[in-house]
Image 1 (cartoon, rainbow, N blue to C red):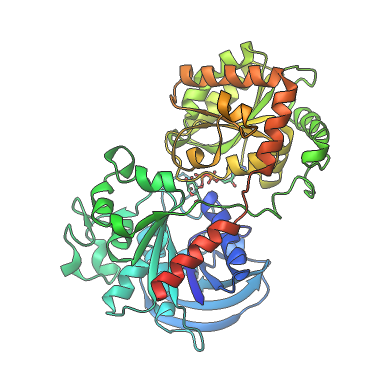
Image 2 (image 1 turned 90 degrees about the vertical axis):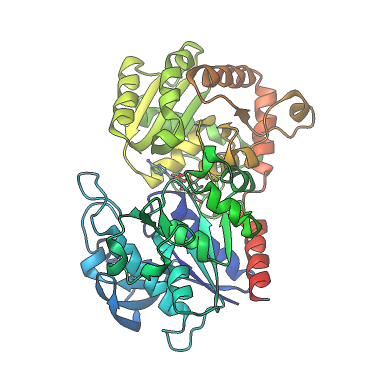
Length: 478
Ligand code: ADP
Ligand code: GLC
């Protein structure tokens, strides 16, 4: 079976969030199941200087925004098909935004071109390569199934995976022509969303299957509260929608073999974790003689993540004798808020603004617990890294967080099944209450360590989810 993935990010090459981790790890997991998954990704010249020289396998003259060619390379165990179109992708700054934090004004062309290249490859543009299934990820790849359907082809079959329905790729109707889209498909049963073109809605209407990254989020997005305006469209296609939980790359995230740690450890040598807390504290200027737990945050700093509410709970956290370490970038007011919190509580709160992959491993290893008070969370990966590193997740009961963390209630503690703390109310009060529960549990080190061991036993690899995708592909191909 051959699967063509189409995506705008892929770890370890280019990453702004969990989408990259998934697109980077899933192909390897599928390879173990005899599925040949190749990833179509923009070449982003500033990010790819170190790639081995590849082979040109296709050329297109008429993509939205100009010509492009496809270069095939294998790197880090992943088979990549790079869309080389420098006029669209050779830019400084972010892959989606310019230096002032504004979306590139031609993002519709950039990801329209990616999508069209995906559709052309799906329909046989590369000699000797015919995928059976096209698996598009998020809005940036969402026009791929639309272009395939426009070409009147029903093979290969298509899947769209929604990693975050908050990002829909919505543009004014004037871009239809530039994107070579059929204007007679521009209506509410097609590509139109409240007078605009919506890339994601196109995929929801024209893909054979829709998945999202956890079973709970698959149910949540059918409701107005979580559907971000697309819940009606999703309800109309509910029979084709399912949730497949993300896994993680357990080689890249392995506390017993992680070169970025001060000391490696496993469930049997948990004491080794303490050296990482000291190393992290020294690096961040936190007091090393605290008796309370060290909580961390590793996150995009945005409203989705509920970190404004956490900010309001910081004084309570410090009063309870806990410490907080924050690693993130995002909304300027949240960055400033966490910098101010660190100034207000020297030695107890530390903030590192920036994106730092290696440091994120030390945060996971050196902290006792990771706080994820998200208002919505399609899956979330940092709680899975936390489980793997014996860093107990403290999570809001939503999306994939609800599907992966077992709350330390009395029954779960008695069954030795508890792996973290789950709470409902994303507010300063709700967070203060769950912080109290975690601080009290930490004071009982026997309980805490038994929870750490349960967390580290929890299956977080791709094994069962890769099988779920394989079953879905097999079902589609028939
Ligand atoms: P989302 O995709 O919504 O941002 P996820 O939890 O799925 O949330 O994935 C976030 C990914 O980005 C994780 O791999 C996390 O470790 C990483 N990450 C987030 N912020 C940072 C940061 N400032 N430095 C390093 N890694 C980060
Ligand atoms: C999105 C979601 C996150 C999910 C990730 C990977 O960025 O916000 O919850 O884990 O995609 O699927």
